[in-house]
Length: 255
Image (cartoon, one colour):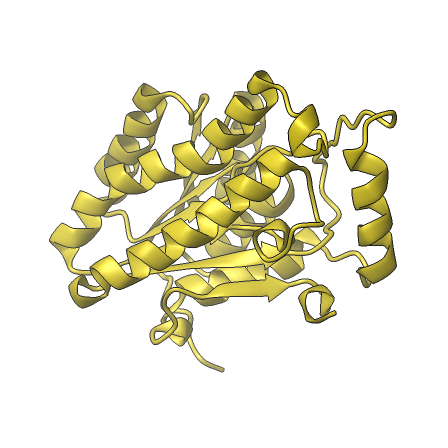
């Protein structure tokens, strides 16, 4: 079996208190990586870090809103100070929109989704890059979405944010490949997590999008299946994979 090469590496996972992020943090820890668990839910982040440490791993938790620059700076500084390096960044934290069509999308919905899903990972990646460039290596994995591949998987704000993530991945891959940095993303299909959708059933967007999704999806995936794809993209096994948006969706994107 090919080694993931994660032993001893410093890893940051955002949105790691639950769902795909939690499964990812635990999976990296099982590969003997040292993991910083970052989440808005401080207590949840600490619980995951404690779970890793109780299993013999190395972890620390940082709570806070990653759309705030000082939290971004704290995450990167704590990882480098504690682990001595920041080898892998997993930009997983995100929020859903209300499945609103563009004409129904209010400024507050748009700004929150773009801020959390696109601006925050941009800022965190920007803060991490100097450390990776100094080391001459680094792997950055984003959680994109089926909505980054098509127009009928979410509302306007979420779809735009995840298309933006896909573009950010490709830009990073091209710009920094000669300096040892790889950037990739998973594009999850429907997955069993705790993420909630506060949809307005009277609006145009939710019933239309719901019909499109219902007609084309396969089975629901697990958080662990998504985490396994993240681990692969971050690992040495994917050393020649750069700029990829990997669907993890039971073939939904092939329909």
